[in-house]
Amino acid sequence: MEQDMMVEDFVLSILIHGLRYLEFIGDGDSSVHQRLIERVTYGKEIVKNECSNHVTKNFTGDLFSLTKNKYQFSKILTKSCISSLTKNLRGTIKKGQEDGGSVDNLKNLLRNVPSHVFGDHNKCSSGCSKSGNVEGKLSRVPTIVGEAVNDKLQEVIRKAPSLLIEVTTNIAETL
Ligand SMILES: [Zn+2]
Image 1 (cartoon, rainbow, N blue to C red):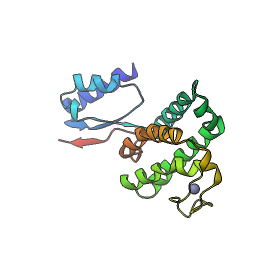
Image 2: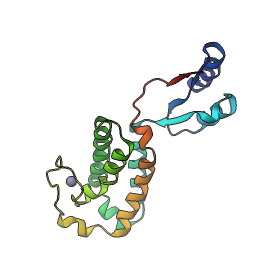
Image 3: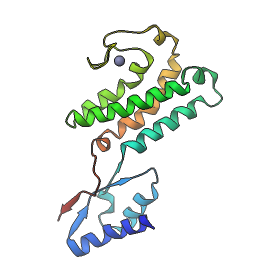
Image 4: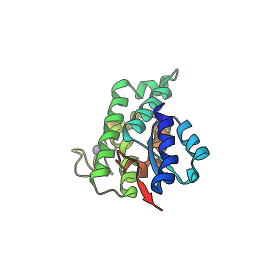
């Protein structure tokens, strides 16, 4: 219902106010975006932004799915390890937002999340107490696990522009 109202808002905004909403905050459900494309004349121009909570939650879910029936993965990606990765991701997104909103900066910060958690602090800023150090635990992380985590992280990195926009309402543009 709420979703129908939102689509309706997009349709009416242009008719009544001559406004085009070009962005909206969505969850993982793509059906709203699809309906906007179908029903709003400028639907194809509307960009879907996902909130950081949702993106983080997806990443955590992806990591848990990696551990299913795979000992090599579950040995490294323990509950506490996944929780560290999640916590770190959350903090990194916040830091990227506070840094002033450069997409490239946020992307670089995000790329370092697994390294930091797995013990390679070479690219950590001075904010990390182990900055510049490499911990012994890094050698226990199989390449295949590191690569799989990085692979899941790509999905977050791809959404970096959207993570920097902490909008609570739709951004409108006057025609
Ligand atoms: Zn670090």
